[in-house]
Structure formats: C-alpha cells, structure tokens
Length: 226
Image (cartoon, helix red, strand yellow):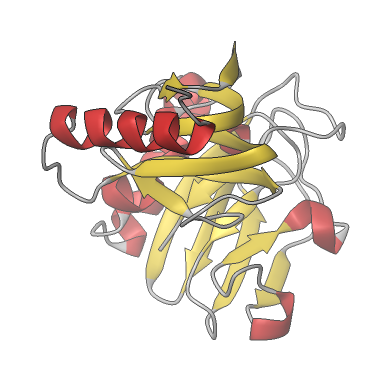
C-alpha cells in the first residue's frame, strides 16, 4: 500500500495531539518570517507551547524563542511549539543561539506596575552601579511592542542625546502593535542606557555596547512594553 505525504502529515499531527498537554497560552516564541503556505500563523504572531503548525511543500517558518534565545528556521513538515524549542516531524530545522535578554522580551511583566519615580531612581542607580542589570537589547534599532494610539518617549539617561517622541498611530505600526525603529530609520547608541515612557508607565533598558546597525534577529531587539 502506498503511503502518501498527506497521510504521513496526518499521522504526525495525530501523534502531536496525543503528546502535547494542554498548556497555558503564554507566548513561547515569535514568528520572525513566513514563506509559502503555513497554516494558522502569520508574521509577528506570538505562539504558545503546544501550538501545532503545518508547513506546505517548500514552505518555511522562522521562530525565535523568548526564553531560550533559540532562533529556528524550519522547512516543511509539522511543528510542535515547545517551551524553549520546537519538535519537528517530516521537515528540517536549523537552530542558532542568538544574543538576547529574556528580561527585555518580558519587560512589561517586570516593570509595568512600578511608579515613574521609583523606576527612574532605580534606573539611575543601576546605570551608575551595575549597567548589566538593566534589560539589554542587542541591536541599535529596537522593536517596541506597545498599544496603538499612545505616545512613545525614549530618553537617554547616561549621556546627552535628543529625546525621541513617537505618536504610535496605526499607519506606523506593524500588525497594529509593533513599532520598528529599523523600519522608521531611527536608532539608539551602543552602550547607552534609556528610559522609555508610555503614558504614566516607565521602562528602563540598555543597548549592548557591541550592538551595530546590521540586521539583527527580532528576538535580540524586542522590547515588550504592552
């Protein structure tokens, strides 16, 4: 009996469905790129552990994991999203560890409830005493996740630099929730410490001293402020 690729994919999905437990919808990875027919996800989607993704012939997807800093490029087959990396059947996967800071990827959870004054004092202290304690991005052009309609203000705190103020209108946002400094032609300074403001909320971060203007994986420059 001839076993078709469709049957194999069906069997693979079935096995994943049996193996995958019901997990909370906490983002595990972000979709950095989609090529060809990929069911159920789009560019810049977050995916949770337990998500099953089917890739068509010659299709590929690039996933970057928020916790492990693994960047995967997967070609064809069936993908089961994990907590730190994917399981792939009937396809090929290439993995690379990229510079990223899990504190930056989860910045909103870490600092959203701090008052402006408290955060500012903490940032000042950290910038002078231990800059490495600040959440760090590894590209000079951050990718900011924030709510459309707000105004983003970024100020340098350890040196003189023009303040950046950006009204986050829908026409400058990717997928309605991401503002990309690279796309806007804006950049920060390697080694600089910054205070980002969204309304009454304040967030602190720094740019790695070795950051360059070269294309950088999304996971290495992502700041989730929403």
